[in-house]
Image 1: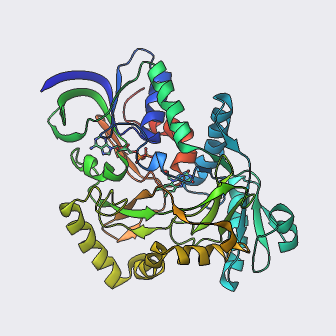
Image 2: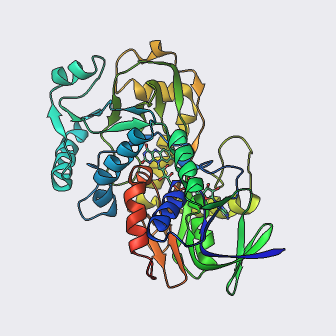
Image 3: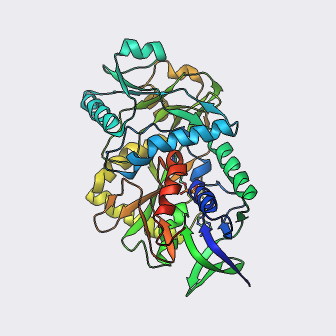
Length: 399
Ligand SMILES: Cc1cc2nc3c(=O)[nH]c(=O)nc-3n(C[C@H](O)[C@H](O)[C@H](O)COP(=O)(O)OP(=O)(O)OC[C@H]3O[C@@H](n4cnc5c(N)ncnc54)[C@H](O)[C@@H]3O)c2cc1C
């Protein structure tokens, strides 16, 4: 095996890894920076398989990193897309109440929007219907004019191109396997790094454990399925239900993509192995044993409402359930031809094993030798350009 050296080694070429690489380059023009990804292209996992919604920032409590970076991150990402000529759809978002219990949550979201400095308006249903004539709600809705849709694959390609143009070395088809003292062992080479950044998404906890981090954490995969309408203009704006603010998922919604295509989803179905996208693809018996046994415990104890979540999510494997749920948000969904499943995405959701709770905010750990991004869940795509600056500021070394 060959042995090479780099000042900065980044494990994982998703949006987090690539934006951190670009931020290090901005500060250190001479440093050698290498990004390794185990797949044959960057952005193969969550960063290329998400809804592409640049969130405005009203879901999150003001003390969270999500609140701190979503508004600014969204503006930066939208400006980046404009500057690079990438597709951008400023179609906004309606948040609708499906049941009586949702109504007080509208106030909570309005308060959070105020605290986070984000525009969010309360509309009557008649007012909302001027924006989207088919929208349904039990009373008032919320309107977020600053929610924007982009094409995540296009964004990833542009960021990777920027990385190449900035002399960042990107090595694909090369998986980090282990660490031995000061040497990183990859599938086909050994590397000595001045500083290591772990942005390995679904495997970030496993990579971190090699460095003595993520002691109390494990990643639980949740599968996001989408059902595509297959045509443009089905609805004019994103329509989301009022979410259960006790968990990090936003509920099945209408997404209007950057090109106007409409889908419903994503689900949050517990997956049995980390890359459990479809059928037995990427099946790992070892992962399945550990994940399913953990899920069994969560289910029996109903930790963070996991049993209720499973009962609500499993039926979403059926198109009919998805269409019924979308029917709670808008009228005449059946006519829209939702027939094809789109590519699934999997959320790398961190669980604290001491409390058996889902981590709601971004989590990171590190020391003088390494930095580990452990819970880069939604809206990390939205926040990525701002979050990269913050992460580099928080490295335990001067950059
Ligand atoms: C269904 C779904 C919908 C979402 N919708 C939105 C949205 O609308 N808006 C938003 O802001 N966010 C959204 N998100 C969240 C967003 O996609 C993620 O927060 C973001 O993509 C995380 O980026 P990442 O770089 O950490 O992870 P990833 O993109 O998963 O990148 C991690 C990379 O690490 C690589 N890797 C893993 N292990 C190794 C190893 N051992 N060696 C080398 N490489 C390795 C992987 O191949 C992968 O490329 C959504 C996520 C999902 C799943």
